[in-house]
Image 1 (cartoon, rainbow, N blue to C red):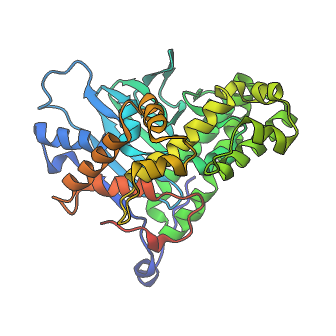
Image 2: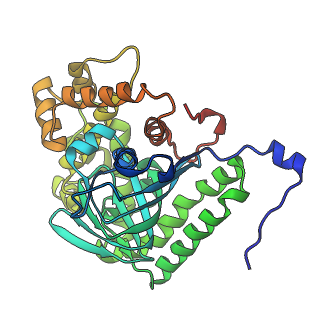
Length: 368
């Protein structure tokens, strides 16, 4: 039996509502409405209807709730092909994880040469910093968007989350399924501080549920897993240091090079891990608007690259565009959004960039 919280008029007046964005297809029907819905999703995916030449009869819906440390999304639409390319990653500069529950419909997820199916009720995980293609049927879904820094420290091998699916009939799948549905149902009864308090505990619950599944796919014994966590934390703290590399890590932890290489083998190697984390930080510097915008060469040296040329090569390899193109693309998105001060795609992008692990200040969240 579901308990519904009721309040008197005075209590209701004092509630701070959860910041909410909602796109109703009835407000803009036909091709224009569907195009706007697709543009709204563009921060997450490049979306194309599956085999539909005429978009006139198509419609989609979307609602976003800002819960401080994460966003909760309700999205519905027709059969789609959703692509997150290197260019999409660079354009949005989102270092986030996405946890998805299909209420209706399902999809196939293709990444890195492998494909996995998601059915109604399954729980799926995506790393929004990685390319992926998702082929959906007509669908309704719930999704949580969580900063990587809010989830990665709680999971032994966070890179293994990308493409992970917890079946609907598994114990942990059922637990997360029930939790997401209950949170969605109870959001109208919660004010912003209560919702944020609930959200702050979700990352821990997710980590607990996926731990056994990740251990099965990527077994790491406890001592090695703890050591890997410590080294990754060390790397995050030293990303700006030019001397960060194999020698510094080995000296700091008393490891041989071969031991370090074996430890990072599931992540593609220690050098790749360091380079990818530096590129993610550099991308954030490139696209974050500020008055004293740093030069590309200054960003390159700040994040430990030996030259501007080597930084540009690594950036283009990772994101499919140059640092300058990434900056120009992000600036164009912001400029076009200013034409409509209430453009929800602009606000949604700001919300995603504003997420912080265990946020505590609701007053920092604004709708415009």
